Image 1 (tube, rainbow, N blue to C red):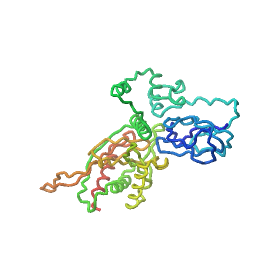
Image 2: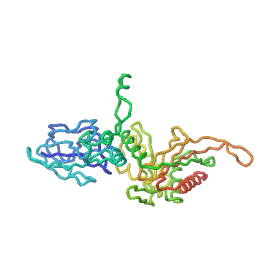
Image 3: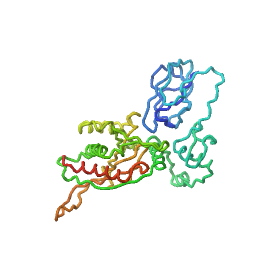
Image 4: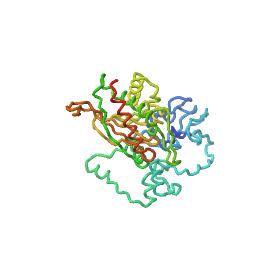
Amino acid sequence: MTTFKLPDLGEGLAEAEILRWHVKPGDRVVVDQPMVSVETAKAVVELPTPCAGVVAALHAAAGDIVPTGALLIEFDSGTVVGRMPSTSDEELVDTAQAGGAREAPAARGRALPVARVLARRLGVDLGTIAGTGHGGLITLDDVLQRAQVATTQPAISKFAAQAGTAASPLRGTRRAMAHTMTLARDQVALSTVWDDADIDGWTHGGDYMVRLLRALVQACRAEPALNAWYDATADARLLLEHIDVGVAIDTPAGLIVPVLRHIENKTPDELRAALAAQKDAAHQRSNTVEELRDFTIMLSNFGALAGRYGSPQVVPPAVAILGAGRVTREPVAVGTSIEAHRRMPLSLSFDHRCVTGGEACRFLAAVIRDLEEKQ
């Protein structure tokens, strides 16, 4: 009998949702044929069949959220040809004799990332908790119960029943956003500065994103402190020379943040093409894991929808995010007269643990200088 466990699909992700099985019990399979589609906090990933043989059993159904390392599928008479790549050292494809004894894996205290952060804050030892989540995963409620903290969340199911409907659990990118934003809220000392750029002198149309990306490059050169990663556990900061921008994209499935790499080396046409490709991939849910990680700074052009100013959330280990609001015409004093100029509202959020107010203001001033250039 050959068993296959859900591998770590990148950056220590704790779980994945089963979207669709491409095989069923009784199917004879060959190596590398499509086996299952799963959705992580990062992307949709297709897992190939790791061995040849007959599918004996599936241990998760479509819609199930499965923790990393949990058993997914069993094969009869399969020959393992290797192992799936993983960022952990745990073996993911195992073989065992039918009826043979297997050594139970050591307890790992496996927990949702948000539960792990809360446990640290409350001083709770995860090793003392028996997780109630799928496959023994430790949840927020498990940590709260261990810490004897009363939960005061409303009875959503009760209100939903009264309304004649049912509460829908968060899935995919919305679930990932909930976890990511909770972690960011708990980890970042968020501060935001606001200002406006007068763009009335632009001689070309409103290609806002390309101009914003160009302004980010100039600002990172003027004040490198905001193009950086911060490691709170080591109390260390890494200033980065390359500029990889995570661009917030609104999709029907939720917020997706693909990364534009090395924008400091790209021409306007290259930036435009790269942005269009990533936007299309985001809406198609075809971004790879590599395209969704390791941004050095973030950009959100929320003004394309509505809103003038905001407090965008910094996502560690990055330390800054620039938000651009809706461009409007406003009265501006020019000498002794009043003129109506097009102005772009800007909101710069930063992690005040490692970025000073002066550094943030110098960065924002550099953004404004570049945006206010005519060309």
